Picture 1 (cartoon, helix red, strand yellow):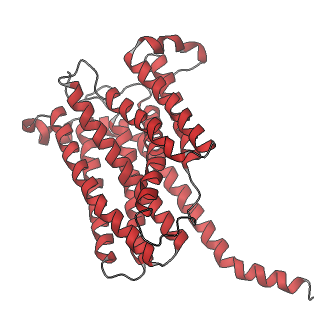
Picture 2: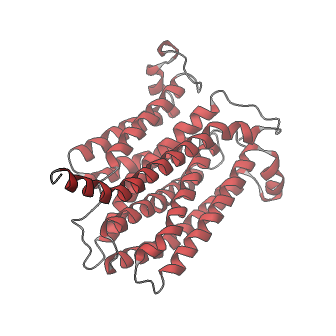
Picture 3: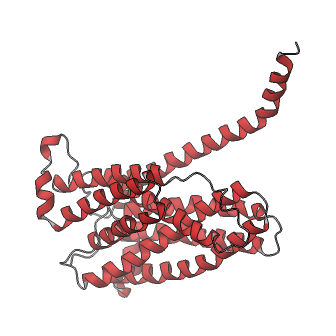
Length: 336
């Protein structure tokens, strides 16, 4: 009796923690499933009734692009949040949450390899290995950019493996540049302008999304503290600038695709416009949640009291990433 009772007491005491962990795991799986459904079904839903052709494998390409964007956000956000934390007096920097960068590097490599295989098959999903022309990747601009992303995630993974996380900034920057160049072919009008806008947009989105995710993980690790309040406040101030840059570059990019006189019509009659409208609405929700979290932060002694809207903000930002993946898979409304 004396040997079994302590074990029973420990089990009873740990039961609430186990239930919370199980609940978080279930919620996480539900969110991951939702994030996968959006890019898989999004292109076909956006194209319904527009008269535009459905690109073969558009759902799979959108899913791979979403995975690649998410894999970029996670390590960028960790580097960004760690840099902010170093500016907070008395921050317990030694008590940092476990890095997700190694998992992000693997996910990014899988996505980059999948997208490279699509390019090697003539922008089609390959049925077998013989369908792919691997050597042909070196002969096209799109193929070279795909290979650059593959190599960049390999290097990023090696940086995390050898405990050099700060060096990830270079391969991650290469991924962002490759995405910016890929989105604007040389046949487009003023492609360098478009690539510059996309580059700023992608970097700001990765800093905002990944940064908030890692800040919340740090707050959870630190618990209620003045350092946590200071970190969240510092992030909030930088996030305002990021939001302004995202709004400006996103609006400019949209107007380059859809001239002002055609925007209202194309937002409902083209797949690109519909997807863009969904993204704008989600960003508006994110802005409201961000404002709610910032208002709660004022005068709050416990930073964890602001985490509820901030967690919802992260979820909404994840949906924005998924919709952005769909946006890359639907046809452009204007033929350049």
